[in-house]
Image (cartoon, rainbow, N blue to C red; front, side):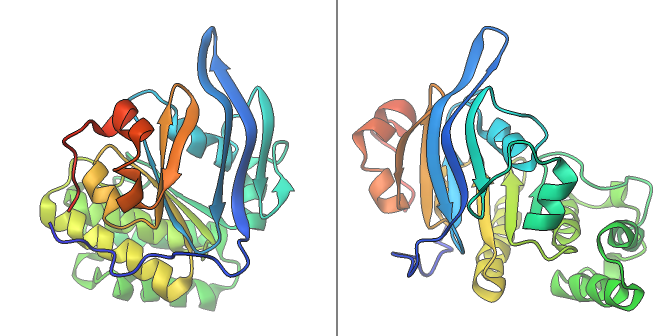
Length: 258
């Protein structure tokens, strides 16, 4: 597959971090999931997370959204510690959008009804609501699918719908959990292009976690390798695949994404 990312952000003029983990630890019973984890995601960045199963990638998303709380440490959004902020406040105040790996839509509602239902929650003005729904339907080329129930959509169409739903509130940060999983090559390429266009057109900060390393590295600016609950390497894709620690913990010696 061709490399989707035609440019990568080499530096950030102000280096403003939008998401920051400071010495975050979390355990389920006796099992330590995150161990004094530290990393930053800068504004306008497409940031990737990679690591073996059970290393804590989805847990990090749950911590950012407020679904769970860490045992210790700080989680900052736009420079403010949000540990004690509930989910709705993080969504509304900091404009954090989330695309789950599974679901995220109402099976028995049509594509249009899904967008309309969520828009009534996140957009107060009726005219703005209608305009935003119609804009997203057009943006994702979903016009001919408006009246089809979500459960009858293909995997790629469902993913488009869920991303559109997450964009209704015009988020500044978008979290994509395993967005390439169980999709065909053409659909993955389509999603990669959507992700890059969202950054380019809307300056949205995007964070992706996935097991499809090549697909993730093709569209991110930087990526982090997690191992044993820690950040062991964080760099541009081309540098990361050469990193000895990243090779030992995740890629192996024969991995290449070009």
